Image 1 (tube, rainbow, N blue to C red):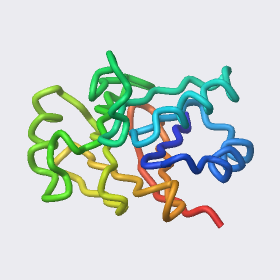
Image 2: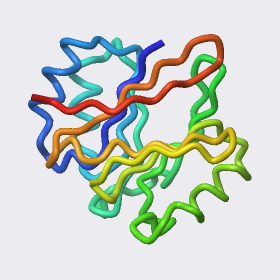
Image 3: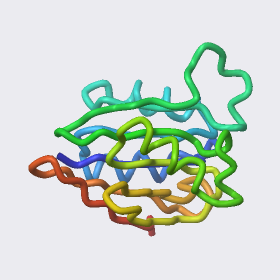
Image 4: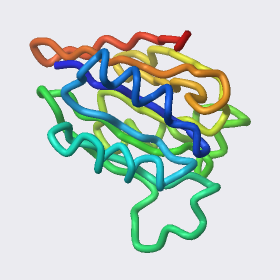
Length: 154
């Protein structure tokens, strides 16, 4: 299973659409900051499940949880934008919460800077900003194990 992870698109999804055409992922995670971009991707690719959470710039989005637990391929993902955990000042609050939730992989954005770290069995992955720096993530899930990799669009 191949999952595309994007965050902080900020209305710039043309290149993301080209990447989806090329990759044809099995699922897409949108980690916030331009909810409408996630909606457009879901409309353009109704055959690809899309899971999204709102970011700090998605203030008009009402009734959506700030985080989601999603299990795919036997891996439990915690999706959040990261602003509610202050990730610009460090990831420890978010990591602590993800452990409490029993997540295998914590996914967040907000900083616009890619980051990967393994916290003793809990993987933290921030794909950076697809809208500004053209970075995104690919997670491959095989036999219940997730492998995270960062990609940059050309």
